Image (cartoon, rainbow, N blue to C red; front, side):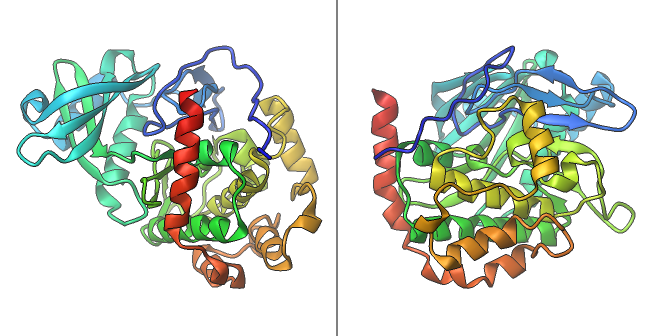
Length: 350
């Protein structure tokens, strides 16, 4: 038996790309400004909406020049093979000259980027977030008007491929949840909220290694900005406090993890058959979504879901608290994900 195929409402524009490059239907609204929309480079062809850039192009270029390596990347990486194309540019696999290490390279023409400041945010967060559950940033270059972002290549693709092609055991779901929570705990301890946790943004190696990606919508929080109010993320995974424009903190990522657990059970998040605005309304009014056939799930897993999908953010555990949940004691070996990854790859080739 296969999970039902994911069928999001058809967006006005679409772009396809490798799962190494993220960005699905996203919404970002700040008070006093309407959201704009554009097709982002995404694993799933959904509309990406972000707030208007506040930095001038010249400021963005200057900032990128300061953080990028001043070198010719074509002399450092060889045998580029295009594996995806998004609205912002192409995604390639390549080999590092001298070491033959396989990498993923995201190439973006800066003139075509409507949200250049988000690119800076993504690079900075990746550079400062070294952890085994976060996709490793390798280098970045400004070369002939293009921005090259080099990162480790996760050949297993995204978790989305796995959840839409396979039935996962609770042990496997627990293992994925643990790894994601470890990455979130690291981000939250460094005052970073991811704000877009979903299966599209979880990448895997063929051995089952699990890593977070897509840091374009991360938020830095500190004493002066301990809470956020900006509506940012992908509607179907958005926490109620984000939808209702309440102040929120890192626990929005825990809610999104809970929605992602439902993906791992049902193949898609709740309300995916609704248009994004309708989905936002349902999240705001219905609170914790209903699980199909809860009798098929163990009490421990149901409690894990209930904890992560607690509407009251004050009562919702943080990443460290979720890592102590008894459900994670049943984690399967990550290597058991390898057959699921292979099955998803074989299915996608058909």
